[in-house]
Amino acid sequence: MNLSLSLLHALKAHGARELFGLPGDFVLPFFQQVEQSQVLPLYTLSHEPGVGFAADAAARFQGGGLGVAVVTYGAGALNMVNAVASSYAEKVPMVIISGAPAAHERRNGFLLHHQTRTLDSQLAIFREITCDQVVLNNAETAPAEIARVLRNCQAQSRPVYIELPRDMVAVPCEPVPRLPAPAHDADALQACVQELLARLARARNPVLLVGIEIRRFGVEDKVARLAKLLRVPVATTIMGRGLLAETDAPLLGTYLGVAGDPAITQAVEESDALLMLGVLVSDTNFGVSERKIDMRRGILALDGQVTMGYHVYPDIPLEALLDGLLECAQSLAPQAPEHKTARYPHELKADGAPIEPMDIARAVNDLMASHGRMPIVSDIGDCFFTALDIENTALLAPGYYATMGYGVPAGLGLQASSGERPIILVGDGAFQMTGWELGNCQRYGWDPIVIVFNNCGWEMLRTFQPTARYNDLSDWHFADAAPALGGDGYRAETREQLQQALQKALATRGKFQLIEAMLPRGALSATLARFVDGVRRLQSTTPT
Ligand SMILES: Cc1ncc(Cc2csc(CCOP(=O)(O)OP(=O)(O)O)c2C)c(N)n1
Ligand SMILES: [Mg+2]
Image 1: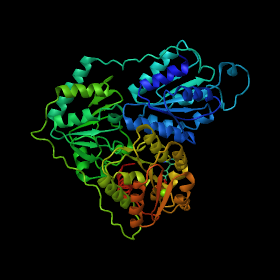
Image 2: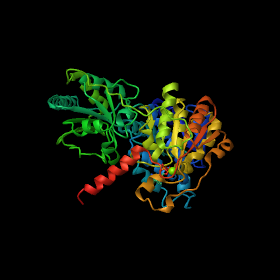
Image 3: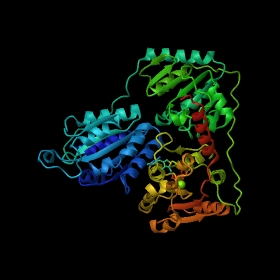
Image 4: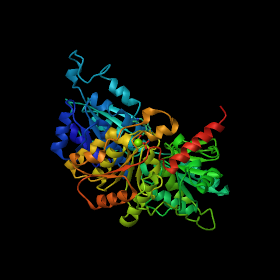
């Protein structure tokens, strides 16, 4: 076996289902090994940010798997930095494989093409946005090094970086061993479980708040079982939206502070034992809290440790904690909490009125009510806030790192990896960045339904600077471009046209369906409007 095959078989053994990539001369030999070996399917896209977002989505959607992005050295890998930074921030287990110069090229004394400051600058840059790195320049040590970085990728649920010099791809190499998950101290785990359960038992209104790590580590079912066993209500953070959608956990809905359902806000903020599982303590999750949550009274299991008050239990993997709690937990209430199914807007009024963001939520909810749930992939813009008014279904969005450009390539990555047809929500500004990746659907038979929120502007920014003219964009008529890219385009000016377009799109398979929903400038979703008001109100009252 050669080094490429050892690497590919190891990726597959760790849960990778495919590779996303864009070739260049430093990585062509590895692409050749990929294509010839057929160990994993390879999908190429048109721009490295899209490659990164697609690999990110593949990892997020399958919970516990790996996304893989393969790029060339320099211009390719550095073009993907933002996507990898987003994966790091949002704890996505992604493997970046970059081709690199051969040993003899490093010694020839020339400045090499694609090189920036030094030949090791790229490695230095990726050290900042990955949890482990390796340069595979030694076939003897390669199996152990690959095993280490893949184990760390999954154990920490963060991206890792593998640099592959082009003269190493065909070198004989032993298979890569599978390392066990990092060990943890059973006694420390027991002590943590007992203290945590005692805190919950003493509480008057314990609440469970769940975040992205419960998907990343594939433990949603265990969390649902724990919530039912403890008989405590569950809410998700904004980043955790869509979690537990496939379970029967007593879900209250999504916690959005002043911008959300007051009952959920009150339950979370007034809880005297808020158990946060896999929750990033970020401004997007807690920035609009009505009342500042006293984290010292909370219990936070994140990044492999558990913090309760001033106690910190290090090296407690989330799944081990859940297993311990499931073994010892007793119900905390005489009966199960009232399972308030959150109400989402339905019954679009299909008339000649202009479209508002909430109409898109209604139209999608109506579609899912008749057709069944579909995964939603959202870009950043008002489309993300509108997504929060869509029924609780799988939602992929960089809600914390908040990079634009994610929606379309991530939707393609989801369909490539899972075979499920997504609905992609994207603003006109974000579509201008990566929407053109739709042109790759025809090669692979992908057929997402894409709804472009076309308000001809950077509307979210306008909410912060209403008078700025630079937020005005022109009308790009995206629907007209769809046939040239191999799909169908619909321009919807009214609610009736929106409903008709969605029905046609749903009925058409085998090519992407682009619905350009024309929104009046200044039309905001109610959720975004409440967020903006909330931020303004909190900023005006926060002592400087
Ligand atoms: C890669 C990147 N560059 C800039 C920005 C900053 C930004 C956040 S929201 C926004 C406007 C989005 O316009 P769009 O038309 O897509 O959506 P909408 O607001 O609903 O009209 C910008 C420019 C971010 N987040 N990411
Ligand atoms: Mg816009």
